[in-house]
Amino acid sequence: MTLAKIIYASMTGNTEEISEILEDQFSGLDIEVERVEADDADEAFFEDADICVIATYTYDEGELPFDLEDFYDDLPDQDLSGKIYGVVGSGDSDLYPDFFCDAADDFDHVFSEAGATQGHEVVKIENDAEDEDKVRLKEFVEALVKAQ
Ligand SMILES: Cc1cc2nc3c(=O)[nH]c(=O)nc-3n(C[C@H](O)[C@H](O)[C@H](O)COP(=O)(O)O)c2cc1C
Image (cartoon, rainbow, N blue to C red; front, top):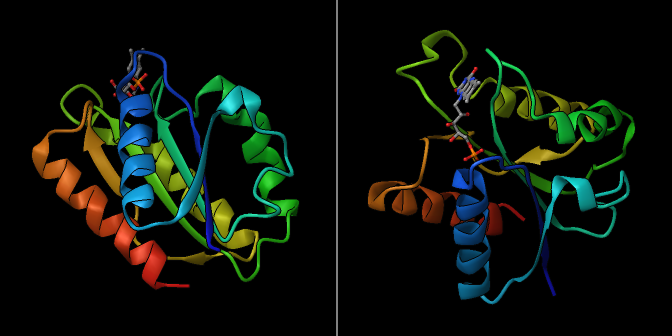
């Protein structure tokens, strides 16, 4: 059975909610799914996953969340070949137009360095997910499942 694993970082709850939506959508497609907060993910977390997902906000003008920094640093040294990955970002393009969802783009780059295959382009969400974002997230999840 396909296993999707999701790591999320969230300070004020937007990205946590996005990760819950993703979890529900994978489950709705009968995909086994495991979702953990960044602090609970060790560097081997994705080892047994078929689909790897990071959901992250961006902080401090383009910076990664503090609790994802170690995972990010370790990711290029991992061998994720044969796995499908996708990244979802939450950010604020009004306040941070030059750094919108930069942390999500950063993860997109290191996933490919680890040899994983992108199942869908990065999905960027303005703060919390609205109904139209849920549609985009559904397309994202379906593409990741199909890409296997
Ligand atoms: C101090 C601060 C810095 C931020 N910097 C950025 C940024 O550089 N780029 C961006 O897209 N969003 C930035 N944001 C917006 C957050 O990423 C956005 O509100 C996000 O939804 C927060 O996610 P969370 O609720 O999961 O913590 C910043 C927010 C704060 C409070």
